[in-house]
Length: 618
Image (cartoon, rainbow, N blue to C red; front, side, top):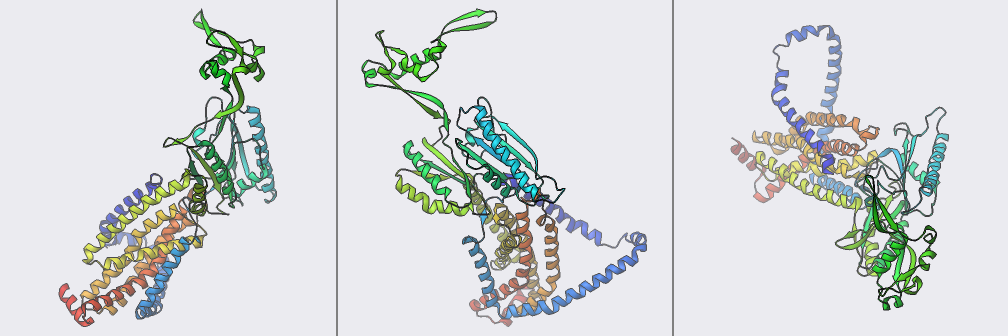
């Protein structure tokens, strides 16, 4: 995940470095009056326009000053007077929001389900399936796609373009395979792969459709119905996934017991609402004949190697000579006539030569039965494993909740029923575990770095905590933003919240810094808090509004390309918006509570403590 998103912080860091140079060097030059006379003369014809803008600006300024003087000062006064109640309400809000996440009221997924512009149906038949049989099933799936298009187009206004733009059918491979699903590791893109097939349907752009691609894919699945004789038939319509929503790997030393456990788990998973496209990685191979020895055959000294060699020689042939013809070698093979190697009965009718040169009927010394081999044998730590995968419709259920139920209730019960069974989670769950693990570590490191950078100039260990208290409440704003926008939390949301931690401390920093400077001038703590809040109201509000308005085009963007970044923008935009109220109300309250705590421990009155701080500052 970090490899995908790593470009964003690099660009942001570069932009911030350049903006630092602009603020410290270029901006002062812009604000200087030197050389501005010619510009004023050039813009003199626009004086009426500038005058009108200035009148609007004055009106806005008067309104803003009234907001600072009346509503804000009164609110701040009440918050300071009831500071412990204010703090309790803020903490209660914080616990409520995070409790909603922990309780599952706010859903979390690794990646947001982004509406795609195409749907894919992947078909896997048993190996050795004739290509005509594969084509027949693909034709049925393709016909269902056209029927789906007629349904949707019938509900569209007259003259509207068809929801289905193009459709392509491929036999012999899965062109869109991205390493997901139980058969991903067994995909064959060359040789005899007549058992594979895929249909790719290109849809009308998401901005022009009235129905999402996931509901369309679900309806497509319903129209196809049950198809017999297939290994797997899956339908997908998501632009980006980090793996299968449900992916459980089972292992057991006894393969028959393992297959029994796989069947039981598939039955349990199928009972969850919203779960579909259930499959497993145990794929039957091509048809084969399995030879065995009878007791009489063993007593006559025959072994399986001799038996297999003689059957191969009779039906496939044995090379006895090569004839040079020009530049080519012609191999001469000795085998039974074509009429004697057409059926299973021909094998049973052959005669087997023993070590002493005598011959006996095949049925006397050997057995033969039809069966299937293995398309692939998957092992982990030298143990046979089978992976069960499934997709989850996020409009019906949440994959994390299903995985949690499997982990806590279903799989432990299966381990009890099948002693020796082990399990592990793969797919999206493994990717989520790895991403969250690295994100938590980096987040903690970033918080320590921020604390150190704040503690050095403040020369205090407590005041940086007040500044950083805006971080969790900013995260609350990010979560509330997801609720307002109707989005679930995802890994991209967390990336935005991590970026938010470095932004929300800025407003708190300038607030605490001004309070400290005013107190160093001999102003009482309450008056310093009131004055600093009023003086910092305008820059904090402007910073918040410009940040939110700058992110709003991305937040409200409807194109598919922007869907991946919307959760990140929502976390950052609404987090900054919410943190403004925290900075203007809660940070001054926390500062006052900190002064109360210092007074309790030191026993100093406010007057004595103020005199001491003035002396230290001077």
